[in-house]
Image (cartoon, rainbow, N blue to C red; front, side):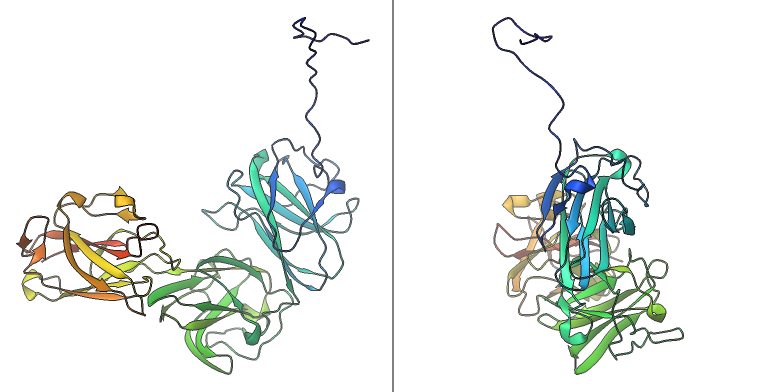
Length: 423
């Protein structure tokens, strides 16, 4: 016999409602195995709090709607698990456990990799054929869609310079747990032992001439870092830093040359170990001008940078603008305006932001960025273009400049914009 329910319209169609279907990995016992390097999508909207598991050990885990995953490496090595790339649930929490579901032992817990990014990442030393459990939740019980990824690096392949791992511009999580001394002591090492005791190695190939900043902000141990040109048998140190960043983190800048591969030695103070972050990006340096807006990354992964050098005295007629961090061998257009800075997103179907007054924009000649991805513009300050005529820069006048690398309408972009205050 069928029992009618509220909402039966009498048409003979019975609408049966009930609890939503269970999520398979809502509890540790249903953990989904993560494959090496494969992003696993998730949505914890219908998840419940795992009351039989130990209380999470890092902040913001108040009754999280958590999901469970497992990792079983086939070799000893470093394992990184993260929620990077999540776009729905953008404030995540991660915890990694050893043991089994009935006796979980926390290895590490991570809230945020560093403001303004509230996603999570953990790197730990894994043992072959041991199963680890990963708990994914949201801050303060928040929910949404995201992705979790586990990446295995067998036996710290980058423990020595010869195994340096190639990285890109942006943030690279890493671990130096289990690292050994490479034999190359950093010049900025301090403490009772060399900073190369627990170092790992990375490489980066510069797409163009550019001033770069590298820091380890967000790492959970006292770091040191060095950048070298040359090869592993003949390293030439370009820069080295111990505590130039936030707290005990490292920060350095170096001038990259397009096409050159640089080796990065990520060490630590007195051999400390933990989870680290390498942050690499261009330095926006306006020179003797003022910055109006930064360039959105172009096809190199870098934002083009425009700077000024020489004299701000209009009658000196001695001002050179340099555009760096550009794609190689592309034609570039320098534009300027003499009144006010405005903002136009993706003008004319191109990419990036035009940050000068487009309604009266003057155009200079086309120049090519060459193999170095760099252009110098020696200005004639007695004859600057507007949309109508040529005019001379005067003392007290303000001019705005920006460069458009013409890669093609689908992938072109703009450099940073600068303001020149003539005297």
